[in-house]
Length: 79
Image 1 (cartoon, rainbow, N blue to C red):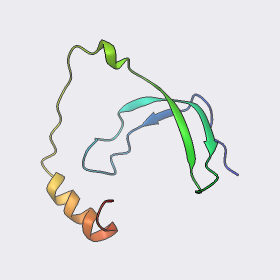
Image 2 (image 1 turned 180 degrees about the vertical axis):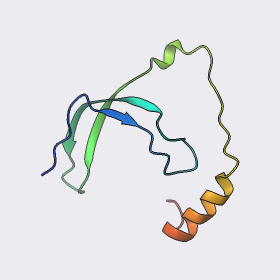
Image 3 (image 1 turned 45 degrees about the horizontal axis):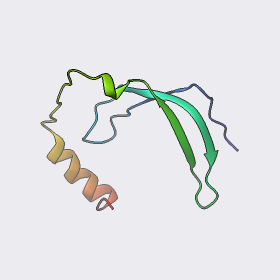
């Protein structure tokens, strides 16, 4: 069985059309293996206090439609 290191960083992968890669999300606070499915339930300590945000950047992907269509053909319709 694999173990996740507590305190390990969670960053975006860039494997979708929504978030660019390399954005820090937070750190692993705790985890457990889900009994019904072969994946972990992970609690994350967010790297940012969202209640203190004053400004945000809006990111628009010029290639989103193309990536979405390729993902649809390759992996099927999102559920």
